[in-house]
Image 1 (cartoon, protein in one colour):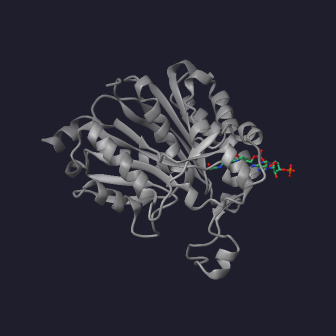
Image 2 (tube, rainbow, N blue to C red):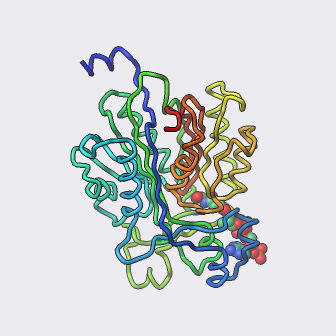
Image 3 (cartoon, rainbow, N blue to C red):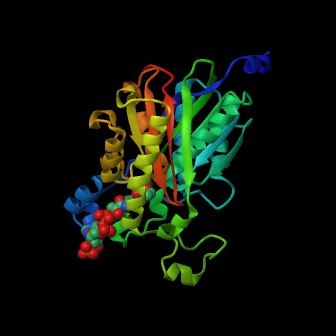
Amino acid sequence: MDKFLTMEKKLYAAITGIHAWVPDDLLTNADLEKMVDTTDEWIITRTGIRERHILKGEGQGTSVIGTAAVKGLLEKTGTKPEEVDMLICATVTPDMLFPATANIISHNCGIKNAFSYDLNAACSGFIYALVTASKFIESGLYKKVVVVGADKMSSIVDYSDRATCVIFGDGGGAVLLEPSTEPLGVMDAILQSDGSGMTHLHMKAGGSVKPPSHSTIDAREHYVYQEGQAVFKFAVTNMADVAAAVVERNNLSADDVAWLVPHQANLRIIDATARRVGLPPEKVMVNIERYGNTTNGTIPICLYEWENKLRKGDNVILAAFGGGFTWGSVWIKWAYDPK
Ligand code: UT7
């Protein structure tokens, strides 16, 4: 019967719940002033960040963040772990190279009837995973899919590199996708990538091209390498253009858009994207001041913090840019009123 129905009616992938989690420990600008040659004033002016959350303690990886987010999500949506069909974890800081952090999160949450895998698209990973997951719902194949975006950036940040260490933090969030016959959920998306951007943002060692060795460690090659200005230039243009393209090709006006949810990498990039889409600051979710750039965590953490302001039918534009380069924008119609 279900199969028959799906052939009759178009299915949409609706977000039916959101939860997020960040660790308690804070790394403030004042703390960073003691670690590198920087000032609170420089960090605020150049990035908009005041503090970040950091996951501390032995044996604590990204799965700790993802597990807390998914457990909260299942509880709040009344979903039994065994009902979940699939779980995708977007991350650049997996617990280990293998197995997938998604497998570890599923195991920790008692999700047994699902297949789980990681997706790596750097800071665009959450929206890539959201769009990928939506196809399994729209096809009628699955009924409950969890998408997690989580990173422990503090595990790959060089706290002697003042241009990079000030921007990143740890955290993550998770959404539940379920089928809807009403036009709600993921409506359209443009996702793009350009591998020539690799030179500007990558981690030099630890992969198959340069396995870990004493010399890679001595050369500090297991940390994020970022040419900030070059990345900034591409991010400002591409994130703003792709968000505007999604809005324009769906004939949405600035008035039709309730919220812009930009990846939180730098307040100046966020402001440029909002201007390009023609949205006033009050329609833009911004919490970079308190979390910094949590990579795959930024967008779900924003959605979670704004959940009580979101209304059924709201047009929400997600936009991201990250290493790869990867970038993209997703138009979603919010599927529920505050509960
Ligand atoms: O999310 C993934 C994608 N990543 C991004 O979107 C990040 C994009 N890039 C950025 O957000 C910015 O480029 C940064 C925040 C990383 C850097 O800001 P910037 O305004 O581009 O600074 P800059 O690298 O051009 O450096 C300007 C000056 C330099 O000094 P001189 O050479 O002009 O004397 C830097 O050495 O600021 C200096 N500087 C700092 N000074 C104080 C760099 N970092 C710091 C610092 N404190 N933390």
